[in-house]
Image 1 (cartoon, rainbow, N blue to C red):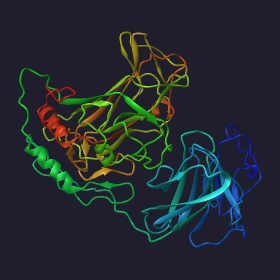
Image 2: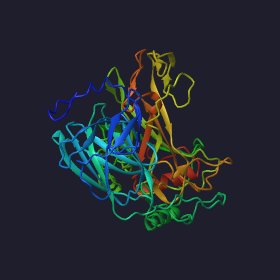
Image 3: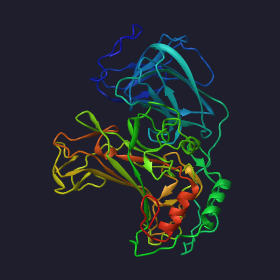
Image 4: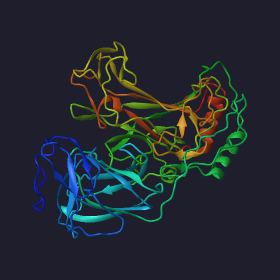
Length: 494
């Protein structure tokens, strides 16, 4: 509960009833009976500024309350906003900049995601929230956005690593010149792959350049591909297992409430992650910082990539994996067209927001590896209980195919996809890439009490890859192990 003297204390936010209300009109909300419906009327005390959107002018919201503000322009502000709460504004022209007037007395902080159309729509930008010194101590934050022209629905979604209220919002100011982002490429080459390695970068249609799309430097990619094509595959001797695969052998290097893919530049803005690989990974990580830092909890040393997963808790205590094998393989019938990942390639698999039951037999569940296997389920049915000779395990698998244009996309998934029905990379995703998989082993058998992920239920398990291999090391492994369909070890040997 807040104790700032300028706040009128509401009920304990941990006990308040979380409801979604619909507002008609704009500005100050007035409750009508017990219906939970709010009708809005203008407040003459508020300053009229071009492009100004009062926070309480929402068309719909979840978890918000309004109060008189101590800010200079008077009127109302929206408060008691916690992780997952949201505010929606209809028929607004966004422009190229958004300025937010915020206050916070929460040391953890978080961020305000601005999205188009819905709580899960296209991400325009994330505005960081840090402690300002009081719930009525106001600061202004400005972000540049690329938004479609014309009237839109703008949704502000609250994100924080903890459950307490963390931000007040007085207003947003929308302005600048609007730009219309192009759409993702819909036409890609559909030529079937052959059994010879590619000799040139695939031709593609114009890249998508809207918010969240990261276009690859084609000159760098062509240079990387030219080096790869010039490599002569290592001769296969003996009788190796004919499985297209090599791996990086990893342990956890550190844990942080950061996510440089989903929430770049927002330290502490995410739930807790357990990081593997590059030991300098944080909210400000870029391709350059990964390549410059040579310290890693993965072998081989040529892999400077960062990998991460949500942290696991047992009875409130964090349980880190004793090891994670990051497999690079191919599930395609013909792996000979597989290309190395470009520097700075990013992708996410799984959904941190997916909170559904995962009873035994459900897809994407945790399982028990080792003698005795699973001997029961947790009280809620979502977690296995393993024999004392077995341990909790999870297997995450990423897509096989890539659009050949983008290093990242707004949802961190739309630039990759599965093979087609014939097992080939085609259509929007014509480029075969190594299929990455995490095999995660936890040093615990579990109990009927179950576990909890930092992202919530077992169903919210997910993984992130930020690739930064040395070109030659990755290229030789793809050529020697995947293209030749030979099982290799951590150091690329058959």
